[in-house]
Amino acid sequence: SQQGEEDPQALSIQEGENATMNCSYKTSINNLQWYRQNSGRGLVHLILIRSNEREKHSGRLRVTLDTSKKSSSLLITASRAADTASYFCATDGTGRRALTFGSGTRLQVQP
Amino acid sequence: DAGVIQSPRHEVTEMGQEVTLRCKPISGHDYLFWYRQTMMRGLELLIYFNNNVPIDDSGMPEDRFSAKMPNASFSTLKIQPSEPRDSAVYFCASSPPQTGGANVLTFGAGSRLTVL
Image (cartoon, rainbow over all chains, first blue to last red; front, side, top):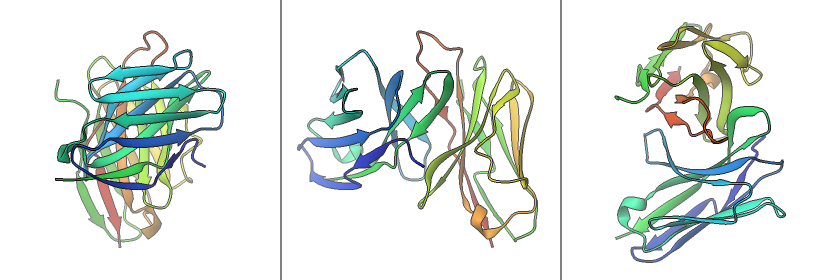
């Protein structure tokens, strides 16, 4: 079963708007990461937040983490058509190198 | 670096045939992962290696699947015999020796398998 569940499953916005995606997970984690997947491509790492961090920024990306609620959110500000992709959260755990991926959010940014 | 290289990018085969997918990880990365992606099940971990040794193969669906890593620069995922339900995109990913507790994966472009 998926460690992470994301919502919404799909999101359609206009260029310039902000996009927010949420991820929930079930077990204790060391880190939480977000990856992007363009259609027909492999996943690309976007940002990592550690379990002792609450918020992190990278360019137009902002990630929050609430370990008490086992949830994270990814905010993309001032979206562009090129942001159209699927976005996945991924978690690891104690003693486990492999990442467990969520179900993903498909983002469509209309020009 | 050319990144993680997978081949073939696309494969169409008939049920019962043997399928071999190949992966070349990034030089210096000591972890290698095989994932499978389908619409129904999302991204599933099949197996991962550390320094060419399989660490966790609990995600391998059944005995029809096998994976090897004969050296640090090459891994194969074999399906024999293949079945239509094996149709999926298979991804290989690698990661460097762990620094600061973070494990960031670099993915290949994937191998899309269609079993008729």
